[in-house]
Length: 383
Ligand code: AMP
Image (cartoon, rainbow, N blue to C red; front, top):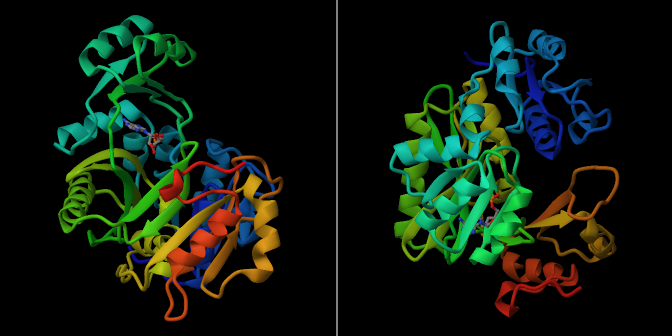
């Protein structure tokens, strides 16, 4: 089915990803209705209509389905059963498969392993006794992660020695996976999109730097060998085509030498793909809208090298002071969230190479002034 401008897109979820999806859809001429429990959520500020209700409220979802010609979601923790009912009347081309695959870490890992996609060795664990058995197989160091709801390093702990096993008590008993700690050289992600027509694209691979397990910076292109680029692109294609996934997905990987390990999937646009807004000819958000609306996919080529820096609550006071002096190759995005809480993503800023200015150099200046220092100097926060 082709959805054209003036028709309506319904988005479940109204956070910053919903906001940027809405902005892309609006500029393409769509009417946008969002569903989110929070009255003044990010996307509500740009959407045409907002249904204020819980993500699993069947009546609210039904209303959204009646209003919308096509439905999508901006995060993975929506009860799949609630959406299955809505799909009886509404058009959700992505279906619930991407949610089913990514809502549960063990399921995700098993699906990847079945496709022979390289991942860290893992074991399912629910109790302390199972953890001890699993540690004998996986060895130290290992990472214990909850199957449900973990993100940005939440719901996980690293076990370096048997003395750390006690730390695991905070997560157990619960559905968890224990996986080998990968001594990777760096982390990358690839954003990939598959359309209802089966057409598929990948965006250039980004190098991701984390602080306190949260994404701090993405540098594109990632300094990977052509061999790594080919492997990551081939893995993305295998995954998308085998499962016939539709929409934009993010695939996070660890790179150790010439080996790729897939760490995590996200069935939606992703923070590490924000650079595409200025960095590529089509953004990850517009590409997602094109994919679910049956349009030809856009050109994902990189215009110029880019660096994206996340702005967290603690960064904002310093960043706001810097605004009058920002270089001309800096593009600011603030998500209009209320309170500037510590570790809350408030926005991001993207630097793009121009003939006059280097993205890397200017990003480094801003990064350092935010109180971070470049990883080449140890990667520690100054304050
Ligand atoms: P995740 O929530 O799985 O994305 O993990 C958050 C971060 O923890 C990752 O970006 C890595 O930096 C680190 N991490 C997670 N799993 C592993 C692992 N198996 N080996 C080494 N580092 C890991």
